[in-house]
Amino acid sequence: MMAACLDERWRGDTVADWQDSRVLYTGLVALVAFMRLVELVISRRNVVRLEARGAVEVGRSLYPWMVAVHATFLLACAAEVWFLDRRLIPQLAAFCIALLVGAAALRLWVMATLGPRWSTRVMILPETAPITGGPFRRLRHPNYLAVVVEFAALPMVHTAWLTAGIFSMANAMVLCRRIRTEEQALARSSDYLSVMGDRPRLIPGAK
Image (cartoon, rainbow, N blue to C red; front, side, top):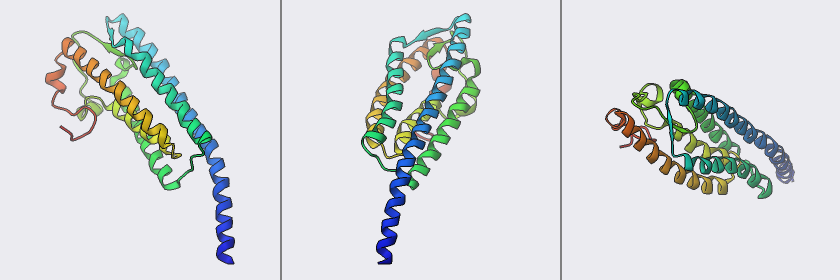
């Protein structure tokens, strides 16, 4: 009898907590969306300054696709949790939130390292040496690593596995083309390959 009562109480608490967690999760998604909007503002300001210094944008046609993937991803995170009744698993949520914090810290580190040369677009300053400090000591594209982690971790905070899978694949397709375009442009305009070519693109220690 006691076991049955405890089980019933646990179920009730779990349902209530799950319903409350959907609201909190939506707030988390909104916070991430706000951070991306702030980044767009910073990026626009830096792009104007870079263009004044003679920078040229490459891969312009890919940029709307990247924006569409990111925007739809955030909407899908919340939609899957609400409409497909995805449950919260506390241990998984805690792990994924830790990954998100790490990804956000890496993003900020990249932005601080690149300074006025950071933007969401691929802007090439001709005959300008690649930046090799900060996270670029270990990776060629640390910001893209942060994006990969975010696309996997944010949906899985609330077990939105469908969004995690579909949008991780979509993001991978966009990143593959963007990285190829970016590295080709950097190689044409600087000694990028000789300076950065021995460093892994996304995974520390990988060859």
